[in-house]
Amino acid sequence: MSTLVFLEHHGGELQKGSLGVLAKAASLGDADAVLIGGGVTSLAAEAGSYGAKKVHVADDASLEPPLPQPRVDVIAKLAGDYDTVLFANSVLAADVAAGLAARLDAGLNWDLVDITADGVGKRPAIQDSVLVDVGWKSTPRIALFRAGSFDAKPAGGAEPEVVQAAVELQEHSGAAKIVDQQLEDASGPSIEDADIIVAGGRGLGAPENFTLAEELARALGGAVGATRAVVDAGWYPYSAQIGQTGKTVSPKLYVALGISGAIQHKVGMQSSNVILAINKDPNAPIFEFSDLGVVGDVHEIVPKLTELVKQRKS
Amino acid sequence: MKIAVCVKHVPEGHGRIDPGSKRLDRSGEGALNHFDANAVEEALRLKGEGEVVVVSIGPEKAADSLRKALAMGADRAVLVSDEALAGSDLVATSKVLAGALAREEADLVLFGQQAADADGAVLWAAVAERLRRPVVSQAAEVTVSGGTVRVKRQTEYGYDVIEAPLPAVVAVSDAINEPRYPSLKGIMGAKKKPFETLTLADTGVDAGDAGEAGSKTEVLALGDPPARGDSRKIEGDANAAQAIVDFLAEKRLV
Ligand SMILES: Cc1cc2nc3c(=O)[nH]c(=O)nc-3n(C[C@H](O)[C@H](O)[C@H](O)COP(=O)(O)OP(=O)(O)OC[C@H]3O[C@@H](n4cnc5c(N)ncnc54)[C@H](O)[C@@H]3O)c2cc1C
Ligand SMILES: Nc1ncnc2c1ncn2[C@@H]1O[C@H](COP(=O)(O)O)[C@@H](O)[C@H]1O
Image (tube, rainbow over all chains, first blue to last red; front, side, top):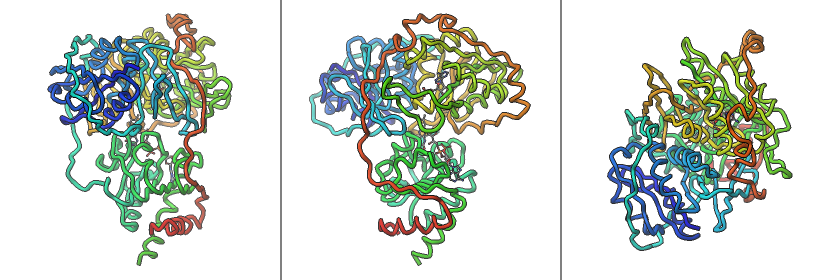
């Protein structure tokens, strides 16, 4: 396999997910990488220790905002030299990969957790109830990997060759502009270290009902987490969000209150030791990966549960 | 402003892959992809004096989902339905959808967060590429003024505010709004609204570029996922809280 891997970066660091995909690609054959941004050339060297032989660098002020369409322009010009182009899933990478698939009329398989050297992708589907072997009928093959599919362990490879990639943007590609960014403030307490997390979702019904999660968390001695749905809606702060675009946690106990269990939430909490879910929908996907699933209303069950936990602890 | 909303008709409840065709079993009941109800709602909120047209590619039964969107308040529906479309993947679907959308020349094309049966959350980027329009995904807030769409959206690092000139493509998050339920009046009125059914040829896409023939991915085999540990499910009755505490005690968590 000759693979090109999209390296994502933020705040002057290469993202672990894309380095994991690079290490996987290098274990299957020749792997190069592409690095796109403003002032990013110095990051290329690190890719060598994850197996990249060559890093194509498109370093230009116009590429600094993390928007997908200019990245499609850059990668489309390089993709012809590879039989496979791989991405670690992210908000940015998904849009780049799909734009590239359309530009090249090349197949895109998403949510893969593995790929073999002869080009078979492994994809858990239908709420992870079946593992599908997927293939491609195009060159290149394009794939997006689920978060956490591969470990990003440096293997101590040589310095990669760094080559400049052409930056020629199409008219529509440069049309969107980032006009403001509110990056997460890294200060403040982090839920990543908590032994117990009680997370609330839209099933809590209203922002003020987060007290249900807070009181249970206090009784259990844990922290409070949230889904993107409630964070986007302004019910709870982004710093508490768990999942693809939030934190990845693996506490001893994860309690999901009114959370459906979407795949983007699951990737942030599936390695928790014990998962307890309360959801009124017996078919909610969260039950597929809970140790104990309780089919019921959080408003009825949680206050009683909090009371019993308090009694037990006193 | 003219807004086109892309909506999908998805199987209800738990999906199932048919072992014979290795495709999603679409023989049962279907419904409007609930993530797309958010996009319809947002379009109704934004349209002002304009028009909202809902567009879907799917079997004839997908008309039910389009009618639900009309009942919510959309003005017009377009269904692309053709035998030759079965088995379309991203490359093929995006071509056909772009063909249908090109006929509409909408100022804004809205997508939902993801198709509940495929969880791709990618189609908009492929369609925008074919239409050569700017695209913004994961929108948690959308405003339009003076020919510019402004979107607030979440990424792995926080929130971005992105602006793009119209015509543009925007995919909304499921937290952007609470979709309305169709009223009885809306349901009755929907029956009289314009409903157009297109064939593949109407979208300007060749049969060889659609369906399985035009797809660039394939399903090779179905297998079992890695086994998970024990999983128990209980009813949330009056004893539920006690049962949970017993479970936590057994796991030495309380
Ligand atoms: C690129 C991308 C990134 C994403 N990143 C993340 C992420 O980082 N984290 C994340 O969480 N999501 C993420 N999402 C969103 C994800 O797809 C889901 O939309 C989200 O997780 C749903 O949140 P929820 O479970 O709170 O809401 P819903 O899916 O609406 O579920 C609410 C649940 O509550 C139940 N319920 C309702 N009332 C009650 C009641 N009274 N008692 C008990 N149960 C009740 C319902 O049955 C339902 O199952 C992402 C999506 C995309 C496309
Ligand atoms: N067959 C279809 N017809 C029209 N729109 C669709 C179709 N499939 C998906 N979409 C739209 O694309 C979005 C993302 O779908 P996906 O990338 O398949 O998860 C959905 O929320 C819909 O807005």
